[in-house]
Image 1 (cartoon, rainbow, N blue to C red):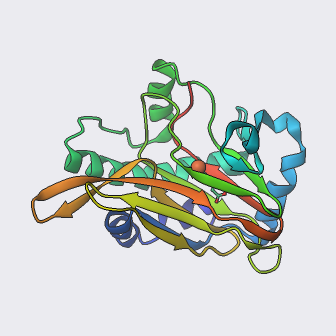
Image 2: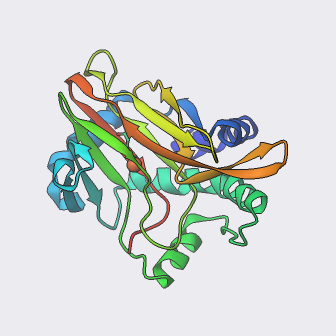
Length: 235
Ligand SMILES: O=C(O)CCC(=O)C(=O)O
Ligand SMILES: [Fe+2]
């Protein structure tokens, strides 16, 4: 089975349910250690990227990341296309629940065309690199008016071996309540699917919006690389 088939054959009923109930879900390892090494090693090939962000300069945390340029590396393009397909149905369900009229097309190139028509033309998939003491502050990856409400992050390093600390965290803020936090354990090559900005929550008085943010706790030792796959492009 190739990667596209592997992603298509995940239990999407179950993934969609957990994603809806909690705002995130993990997939189990999808990328091989070799895929992970190759992606992480590509960090030094600056010709693949359109820009490099040093997080401390912007108050985003500590560490750095680079946005890929188009054309994306084929593995990244494959992941973006293969995850978009089933996630577009989940996103459409969420929009219906929240009364948002936006309907996402079922294939990523069509959605990308909508982004480009809206002036969001710059690619958003990114490679992040953390070293000891680095961290990523809680944030939302919004890059313009057009938002696809779910994104994907892959852990490329091996926890406990390549690094310690550096956990993926999510917070949710419900109306008139204090924030809750979830720590999401990930294995090398595993992805977490999560809400970009908000998700619908079924309550006793109907459906309400829960706001979500994500980040990474302090890396205690070693190096940690992640691949972020965001579906909307940037202004
Ligand atoms: O490094 C991480 O796990 C978080 C990456 C991130 O913020 C993203 O993919 O948008
Ligand atoms: Fe992010």
